[in-house]
Image (cartoon, rainbow, N blue to C red; front, side):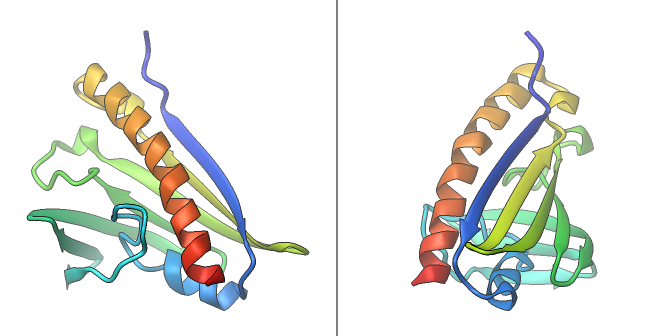
Length: 142
């Protein structure tokens, strides 16, 4: 059985584009337990490391086109993982009549050195994105 490589999730948030952008352009906003929180963090160049629950979460910002898209690379919370166990997250915003459509695509699970770990991480992150996007909507819609 091969590891699914990509997760794609979408949600519409009824908030101004600039408000949604402010959240999604914050590295690691999705790292939490279903509630948007402010993290202790440090930044070194294009890498922001969030410190949460005794773990470090290094997140590299790969690019940004304000207020349309931002891309990150991260290792799902493992600061010492091999490069093959890092995934790319692309987030895009599009204004619609109902609000701002947020699309998240996370990819790279099939490249994990350990296929079983890639499959497990893909499944966990699939559920995680459902939770985190719902938290983002709740947080931004107030």
